[in-house]
Amino acid sequence: MSIVWYFDFISPYAWLQWPKLKLLAASRPVTLRPILFAGVLDRIGQKGPAEIPGKREFIYRHVLWRARQQGQPLRFPPAHPFNPLAALRLCIACGSTVEATDAIFDWIWAQGNLGDSIEALAPVAARLGIADPAAAISDPAVKAQLRANFDASMADGVFGVPTLSLDGRLFWGGDAHDFALAYLDDPSLWDEPEMRRLGELPVTASRIG
Image 1 (cartoon, helix red, strand yellow):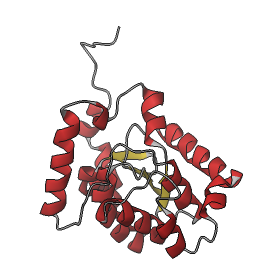
Image 2 (spheres, helix red, strand yellow):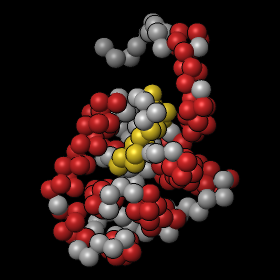
Image 3 (cartoon, one colour):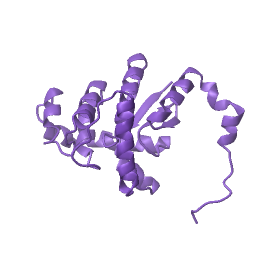
């Protein structure tokens, strides 16, 4: 089964799911596919959670509480939302490996450092063996791969991050991780009568004219 994880370093929810993804990747082939969340929001015409006053403050506190509940370090970077392009491109320049993804996530979300420029990410790049990080993230091949990742996410129907795609079945958010594992163990779960009915449920009222 094809297993693809779409994520953006801007997302604290991706950081919360990351430990579970590492466990999954240790037992099965998983493609890590960094994408620009802002591009997804633009394409589907939706605001990000942190762009909505009130919701922004709540999710920050909720994310911190969830991290503490699961014993995971979390320290928000100095500003959020931030521009994650440099972090995404650095990950791709390093091959989008588990090691590179882990190092960048840890820098931003465990240590609480800036991740909005290659200057801010220079210590991580050095640890990952990138001698010239500015050149690495400016490489046309790296930029093309980030665009290709986004195109793949749109082809898959991704509408948020993090999203785990299992042969095209989308499991959105870290709280859907156990659901995804259940599907991995038994793909017939999706074909149960009530599951199929939900996919065809009619809409009787809509705010979209």
